Image 1 (cartoon, one colour):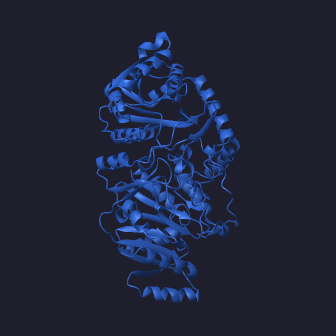
Image 2: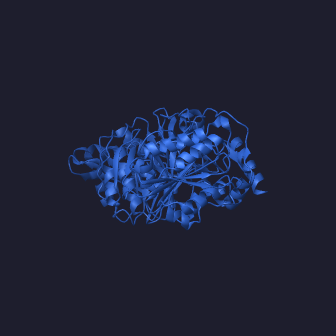
Image 3: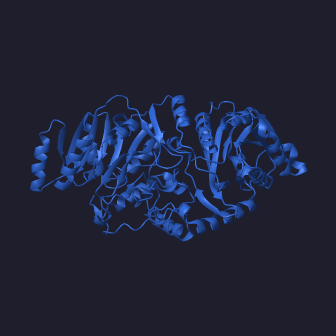
Length: 573
């Protein structure tokens, strides 16, 4: 298969994401809620018991929450507000003042001990509803009119349900939307992305672990971690169902509840405060120093190859590493001299394969002779600029339920190139947030936090040898493009996760002005194989975000129509 080079282009500025486009979002969320209000979903026959821990919240906040609950499209809910003894009288008065007389039977207050923490309040509320379907709500939360109905409809006895959210200012304006991905356990350890609203099935309320947390943000995170551990299924309702108070303060930097979750799961990792409020960095522990094979295909480009090999060597000292260099028909004398020098190293093996360029085939051949238990596929235009990247990749790749791990890749100008791939983005698969500034964390902090994604780029992809062999390596019928995405998706079908690991940061000298490789035949083949997944939408990308560009902005009708026309042309070939 011949390589097709698209015309060189400059990387355009990254458009604003949905949280940065307040006017467009406010219009959209109001219209979306109006449409749902008219359709009023069926709520089933069970009652959703809402538990509200009341710390030092004011009566006005409790009143806002109650007003929204009384405006629900279904009456199948109850509310238990839990307050410390010293506050119980005030809380009870606020509940009565905000509840019509005919509805007071469904609202009650429960006392906890004086000086009770937020975790104590939540435990008391859950204990009062063991065996019931429960949802967590905080004073000041304003639920969309159909929130109870949609959460109840999606909830099962052994399930957990969460939905999207934003913040509501006193003047009624909407801001800071959080249109979330599908369930991502690694992302949930790194941040409280599940957030609110959170509903827990009746079979789980008695199984939640002891919660060690203080403020509302930490408490909701600890509760989500515990509930999702116990759940058989975690469901995401892709609708904005909770409007938090805009004046809710930032979370306290406390890692205890994340460390407690890791201990419960028997997972070894150190936890530190992350790059943004309410986020965390996990450094996974490795099972010893395993042998690693780094596979690097190349053709000429001696400057790139030297930079790649030298930087990898310097940043992986102390590791058991072999470099497998795959020469795909080099002819440049400088390249030949460099390869001769490298071949004399004990940790370097050189394979020579002058077949027409087939990225999958070259790497498969190299994997067959590589000696490592972990295989790291690396482009020759990668530069390792700091130590620790390989250890971070291998620690993730060694986990039994992980199929592939990808790195954080930056362009030479330090803008973001890769933080995981989204299937169906800007074509068959694309890079969300490409072009983001180096020090920006991006939408939902996606660029800076470890998380599940559907696929990662083969420019740096780590996997265990047994996983690679199990799936027969890369599909050589996808010789140039999308073989890396296909590998990750095939692993996902078999229940193995693909992870993005930002602690493994590398420079990728694939400058956007140089052009990119692409094979139309590969794209058509890939789309035909995975059209079901593409049509349904990437599970780790909210369906209300655009697929037309990498911005994580709202999906506009015009851009989505253009995407669908592109998709139709491929499926008809």
